[in-house]
Length: 159
Image (tube, rainbow, N blue to C red):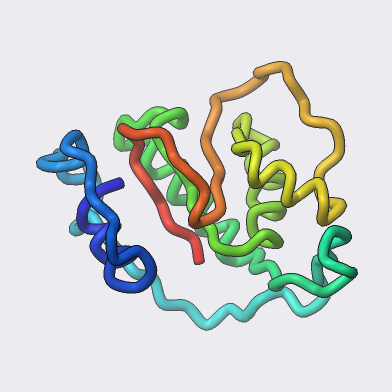
């Protein structure tokens, strides 16, 4: 990931994180004023949706936020207008409930790709049935924070 993003994670969670050489000196992201952008909004999480993790004794996990999902979809479209291909975009989210909501929304126009860890977590939570194996649309990676990413991708954080 970009050093501008990894420096935030490094300071908070991973003190021994070392950036790979290919992440250095990347071009600035087209169409935005900064390579790291924070968005402030006043839309709370959805109160009517609580996700229960079957693998965790039925304890509720974090809530979902439909507003943020719509915002992510619009940003993905904007980045596509700037010339970025879907397969070069990674959407990061820290919450399993939000991952499920993003996956469902992205399936309408793209082919969201989950890694094995996130697929298993969604399956254990009862939020994922059999995985569709046929590629029908542009592919886009969707990952919870902390899951491994392939190098050479642009990231978008949705927390």
